[in-house]
Image (cartoon, rainbow, N blue to C red; front, side, top):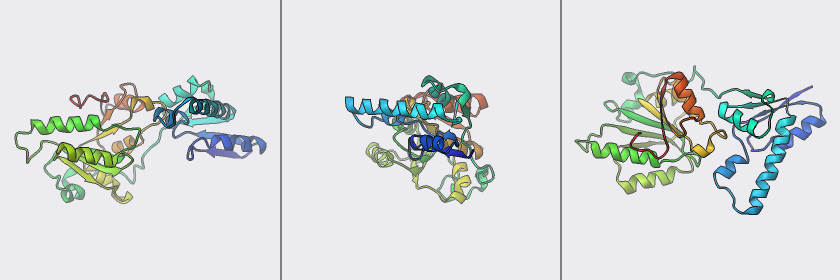
Length: 266
């Protein structure tokens, strides 16, 4: 009669939780923050026929645990559609989007935001990217847009847009190397900020970027969008026009979507 909630950290935890829950006659709820092994496949982890067979075996086992669960909680419509496509009954799926703490993250007016002063952004229009820059994201679109804007500046010492990148991730070092190689001058790099300053950090930008590779749609939902909206800022989504974040932005009228690779549009 107990309820066992199995998340996806570590991935495929349901493979262990499902037989234990069945043995103890507990109700299994799978809470999927991401969908494995599809994420690993989409990121190109492993090659060859043997790896493909392994992924197929894991997917079949995973699907059995999803079908045996009382409920499978997913983060959005695209993820729900992906599971239905794998044969999981819609009646066993519930959508509960991730969220931000609206008490911890509030909109801080630009005029009184201490981080805008500390970071020299008082008189700038600021485009922000906050959080993880990982393998599920790409940065070429961003670099192309920065290059276009810098070339259009009448005074190179006063760029019309400042690009504030706060955070880190697997691609951060490569991103910083490309900034240096291209000689881009309008990018400001900052480390992750303390949780108590997250509202100030997110409010330091006039608009935020959120990105996801189209191949990852239905497998991952960039949760940074919820912090951006809690801070009262619009978002530009770089990715599939029918992606989860793109749908949210269109439904709420809180930003725009541009295709991956279209730096000019950004």
